[in-house]
Image (cartoon, rainbow, N blue to C red; front, side, top):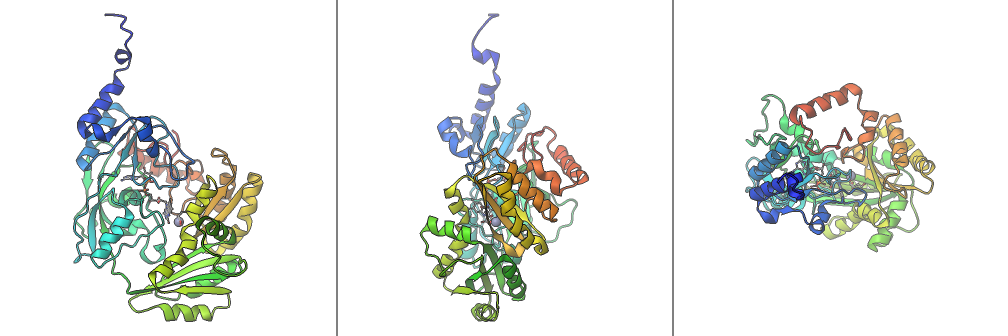
Length: 465
Ligand code: FAD
Ligand code: 2HG
Ligand code: ZN
């Protein structure tokens, strides 16, 4: 038959490729039904979405490697996905990729209490990891409001920061070793748990923060910490960010300082409206801080007396018991969901030198409004790390004028365009603002060496080729 019109003979690749995936994973774990794919195709903010060729759900590293080899053989791009809580559009397809979900890699070995380490698979959520550590009398150093969905693999891939970076460091500081599948389907493994191991390049460190562009993290060996015996939390009202930075200078002197988080009146109002929580203090203040101290002996006294003696403090609420502390934290932690309920935000996660932060805060709202009339910027973040989250509400999903204005302002003040969320696709056009041509060329050379076909999360970090 020379003129057979059947589509299968014109383009045999899709059926062959998908049936290969089904052979590797079983029918139930290769999803092509549009309704079932949908939740994997839109990001947490709802700003980014794309259509996947298929969503696959391997059960272990060997299956991940087999899928990667199948994709590499056909040159089909892959988007690794953990909890899909990333905020820079890097976890969802741009169009036609295979989304590789790590959700089924959910195992953990018993906690190694002698070494204070855990070996755990990529799909385990941060909250589950925290619980496993707690049950063993230890704690995990990274905590973030997305803990119930964000995964071990996703937090490693983004080098997630969170609420306790100033005490325990970001995710990279917790990673002792990883197992990962490279873009050619080879598995690398550095899981011995040795805390000192200078044997060539630190591939675990390189994959941490690589946003799924260099390989797929399947398992990790993570550091755990001795937990504090007692915690004390304060919600503090101040006149301005400048007063908050002055207070930061004092609070930093406390060895027990665990977290110091900032937000402003507009965010406080959104959170109260969204959660139904009462305004914690009468009237309106220019700036609010959540300050937490934690130690082997009760830190309440030293935190309370420091706040008592600080002229910056206009009002303070104080808690030592868990439910009351969590109620104070809620004013800070609920920002992301409250803003999400008000609209689809453009999320700009930036760091400033502390000395330029007041200037930034004083100018950024006007910069946003003049770039996109009607847009508004809500600021909050990790004051102790110089990290502010600028959430812009108002612009259309693809209107990037406000993003451009904010990121240029950040660069002009000596800051970084990404503190903890990564570059993803959202910030790729601005990478050059805070990375030099030589720096970008070195990063591209690493990418090309490990992923010569460019199949691993294309578009992320470097933008469309
Ligand atoms: P995903 O969103 O699924 O993926 C994120 C990126 O990692 C993508 O590029 C993806 O391709 C890649 N990836 C995922 N898994 C793997 C893997 N196994 N191997 C290789 N690549 C992979 N972030 C912070 O840093 N600090 C915060 O305080 C914080 N708070 C948040 C609060 C809320 C309410 C929300 C919604 C998000 C918050 N985030 C925060 C952002 C987000 O939770 C983190 O970026 C987190 O690390 C993403 O983990 P995930 O498992 O959801 O990864
Ligand atoms: C946080 O610090 C997260 O709460 C999310 O990093 C920030 O929603 C955001 O912009
Ligand atoms: Zn944050």
